[in-house]
Image 1: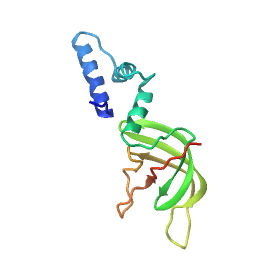
Image 2: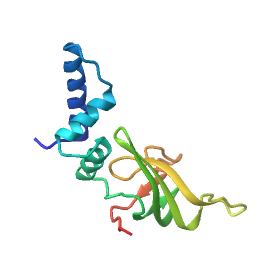
Image 3: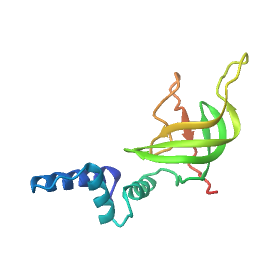
Image 4: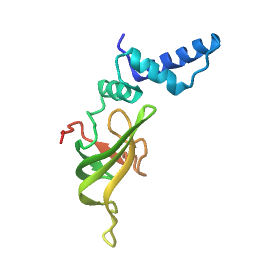
Length: 144
């Protein structure tokens, strides 16, 4: 069986509970680090990123070049922060050119930095009123 994020978290929980039953209490974060080491990763964040990529997330790294749509507007940019939050990823993208996030001709709201949370498919769970994800990263992620 191929290790998934969910299975790795289950292993960490089982480890923590087994140690607790034997009188050794550890935090969940310590259990996650132990599971990461068991699977040959230097830490939990490294294992998490590896498993996420295997499950379909484009190879996102700091400074990766990305493109997609933000509030329906096409963009290109560079990843400036990236962190795992459970099965989601917090991402901050510095856009190459500002994107107008308002669809009305009477005024504008230009954004040059986008902060969002995306799932393993590069889509934000937050959606506009017409059901479109706020942020959609195209599968083709180019390295810097």
